[in-house]
Figure 1 (cartoon, rainbow, N blue to C red):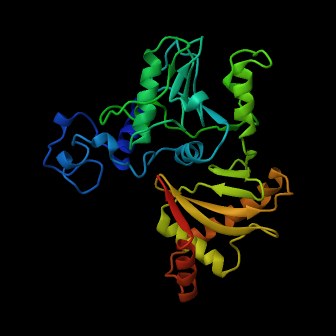
Figure 2: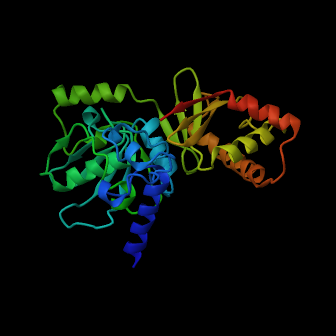
Figure 3: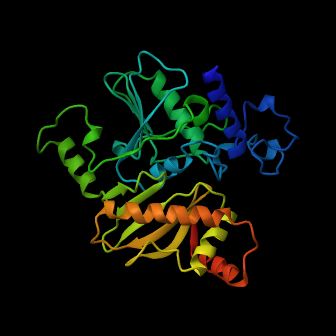
Length: 321
């Protein structure tokens, strides 16, 4: 029964996040597309170029949405275990990675375990379907195989149809040694490639185990990037209330600098004191989370000052797919 419930949850996410629920013959081409675009199915996900359509919020409705976005957009070296809805004895584990060697979409290890990459060489307009396609390839592949790029399918399973809908437990790594199954010879081509990859990593750490919240040392400044689960209008209103109350920062030496949109969610960003250790931001982030929750709970129209603050905050945004 529990498996059936989980699969049902995944199917709901399919319709909410903007893709067809099944083959073309299962949807009337003259009816509105199940993705919610407002276009008829034959002009949307039933069209010849459906694989190029952009699904604005590919992970809508999933418990791991904020972590999936962080893995896709800005975590340099991180991984999280996944649970198959239909476990297989010949697949010891499935791991979701921020990035794999060569920005591959998937690979299988010698023991049959699977690794899926979020930051890939090419992708379609639906990242959720890309992940499912890569996983299906890996489930059918021989051990020690690599899928460099994902296909261009416009129909088929999506993430929530194959993976149990549950929060992700993300581990942030200091380097990419977790890529390797065994030790490599110093000075070898593999070792040199690993050194180059490690040199490009920006130091990153989770903040207070808050979903989607990460400290990043970007060089001259450190930042807190926090993928938020709320819809944009109430979040913008809450941030505006905090701005007017002069409670939008995270303490001395910090500054709210703006936000970016990624895959249908908003990611606020703060400048932080680079000399402070990542763990020193746990308490300020938790305190801000409490302030934000109170501001989100306010059900009153914005004041003139709060509207001006909201407009100013909106002016400091840009969008990532």
